[in-house]
Image 1 (spheres, rainbow, N blue to C red):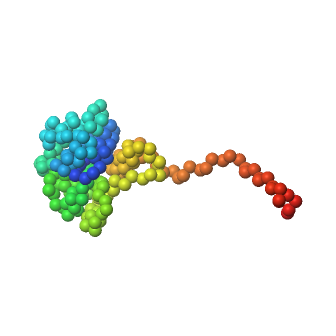
Image 2 (tube, rainbow, N blue to C red):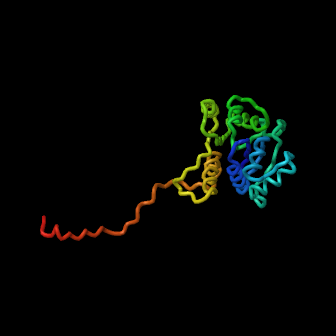
Image 3 (cartoon, helix red, strand yellow):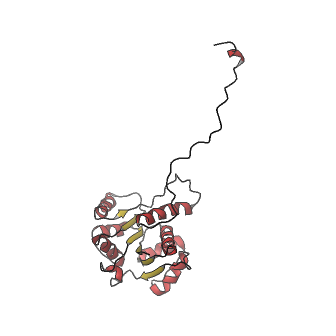
Length: 224
């Protein structure tokens, strides 16, 4: 199985992170996670998940939150200031990294190689080692600064995947919308999942046989 880094920054979109973590662990992958202080606040507001900042105490809470207590995968949590963690070094090989959600500030620091903590450093390592890096911003509207930062990270090799679910699959719930974005994220990391159904074109209209000719009106009888 693969080794993946999951970064959670201080932007709206915590349900996407939960679904991605769940799917990674259920598939048996090794997940190395790092959450910023702002990311912990988002988890508390959007998911009701209150973390202490103590990695040993928060680890089981995150696994339960991801509904992955019985998953075959392995989960390890690092403090966002632990720049001595394995994922801070290019010598520690990983198969990819995703930052979901990715705040505008985190995007800017990654775009300019400014590591303020472990999350940015791990992303910087993925870029310099030419490994997969997926950034999932949710900000809207976008300023020119945001767009230029997205261009910069794309030129450096990252994938910018906005949290913009589609509606062509006729979603019936918020979970359906979350699944579409999470499925896109996993696919960009090279992870198979059943969250996103491939588009196979519109369904053809049902065929009910040839149409019956309209009966002629009285005024039209005998008129040719």
